[in-house]
Image 1: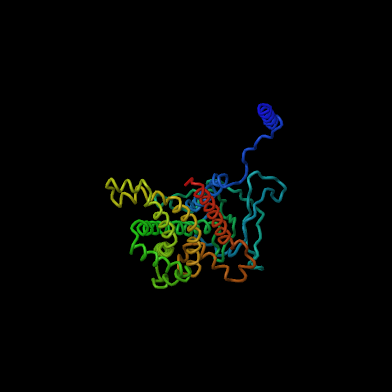
Image 2: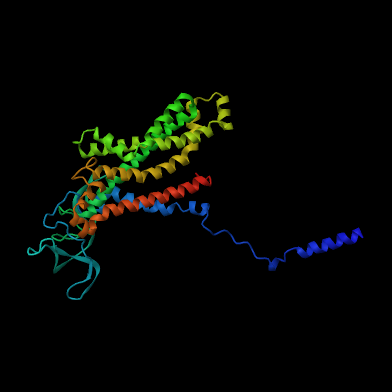
Length: 377
């Protein structure tokens, strides 16, 4: 009887096995989980690299110098590109007409259609310095004189808005990046010392960081800048903005790095290295700080757009880089006039550029956090 029961149970077990051609195959995960999202860093890195390349080589991409004025064309709208001339002929290369202000209607511009001006590539124009090393007159695009091309219009002084946007982005973007590097470096060093040594040093640094975190950063920024001289050169103003913004924001990176170091200093390989006589400097440099790389990189990507906004704020209030050197902040001061804000939409370009760059940085931060969460940083 027992033998019969065993054979019956074995038969039932064989019947319960899935038939290969009737069993659905498991599909490979094709969703948008953390690993898939973390692998798409290029979605943020490529646009950010393109934007920073544009502003780094602003002299080449800008059709004019940022200080060049044409007082006959204040607040001129963007140039219109044409492919068909008044005679109905189609042109493969786009062209523009010369813009002339009619004397009877100031502020209203007409196109002189008596002559077409094709857009040229790699044309000669206003000289500029390339990386401060040599001078060049070659620009990406332009038109033959006396016509001018201004794809983003002109400001109230007749200056090309696109050229000023690129040159101003060089100031605002790199000021924010350098301030983020300064802030993260300072915070990483102080946080590493606090977490590694502990004791009174840890308590003092953390209480000091809490003071910085408790104060509103904008008011703290303005208060520190108010103590410094207002009449400074553009380069000195830029250096002051970078230093102030970078030193004000060290507290949060320091606290995050301290937490990582507190965890890393008690690991077996750190204790083993200490047992072999390794110095504190060697332990911090070789074993502890590499553990903080992911946190530091993520914090740098998170702080960069905030510090770009801080530089824009300082320049907007007249406490940063001033005219004639462009910054996205001092370019936005034109919008304080109601006519410019309501009628000249192209003057909003610095604000739109600031929003776009900030979104790209926050996308990069999100992707870096995904990688940090799954242990790929």
